Image (cartoon, rainbow, N blue to C red; front, side, top):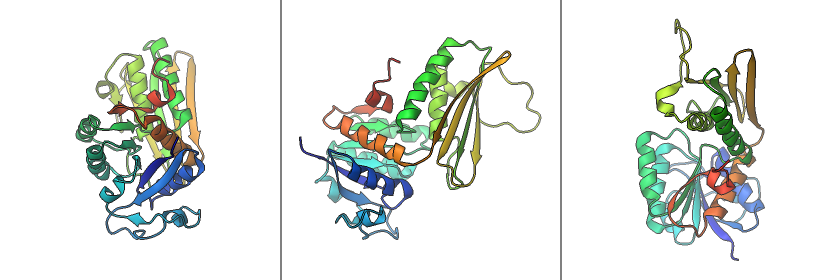
Length: 271
């Protein structure tokens, strides 16, 4: 079987460089293109060199369109505006699109869902195996416990992260809400300050911490009468997200158009 030819969007960023390394380490995948934002200081640079691998002959470009003719898919951990634009460009070619971007608005989500009618899109707030397994556990625990157990989600990331709560925290929130058969938008409590009154039964609370170089820590707390259950995941290296994204791309290669998640990739839907 021939190697899957992949493009990395945001190749000059921390995740982009990690993705380049992950592709180099993965049998069955090969890097054929790298893109970054117009005006980026890394344009024209060698993607392998940027990733610390030595030159691989793939130069960072601003326009992904010409590269797509030689590719099977694109992996994208960028920003919402770029992600929506890339979703349309990749969909025109019917290629695989793996999206790890967070901070997407409901309108962004609709546009991505429309693009998924023409290409296989795997989108997740977190591509790590451990996080997705934990989300499945959160759903199961929330389904099992009644509303005597309050649900609180605490996350901490590095001081450069631009969105809060994190995409992973929201993933856990959606999993908990699904376990209780409620809509997260109606029960989420994303900010407390001052005289808030007693906690509303059934709400799912979020707390976001920022500082230092933390890659990503998440805890889901089920706090009941006289006992507490805590499910925690700590990310120590961005490579866990990159490996998951490359695995998702390989899984999606050859699949029919649609909007998929890492639960689909890992077979966790029925957990």
